[in-house]
Image 1 (tube, rainbow, N blue to C red):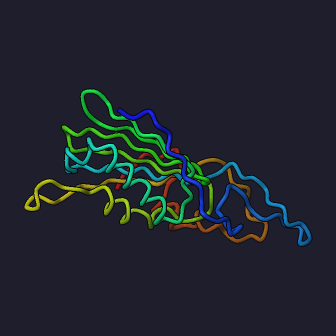
Image 2: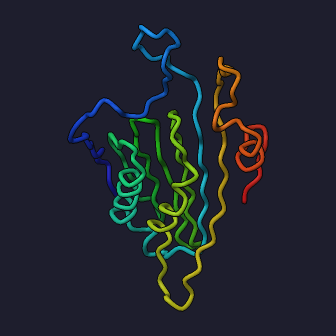
Image 3: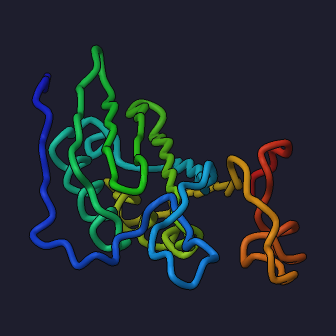
Length: 184
């Protein structure tokens, strides 16, 4: 059982980190405005190795690798092995958080990733599937994944009259707002 909090500090800060902000409209004002908005990616996997789902260190490694490969900044994380089995883990991102809970007996892990930047989260899905779809039996290697993407918070209307990338017509069909609850 772990009670350690793992602190991870970025090796460098290039000033181009995603945050919950947008550029002010004033040409001469370099300050950014904080936006109460974000994206929430919810992912459920079934058919995952029970050994993997009960291995706190392996799961933490997969979470750290997922955050890093996604271009997210993991600041710290904490994982906790549960009794009689399972692991819960949460990672604090500069952009918000990543977390998961496992049910080894059922071969299930549920993950969520919330970011408050404008970066796209749906392209992260294949990476999550790669890092967390560990199987015991190579003959039965199919892991089922269902997911949903939610736009959270409040976004001001675009001042230039154009639709925002996550609020165009196709996004309203493929992606969803919090008042719907449909998974693919």
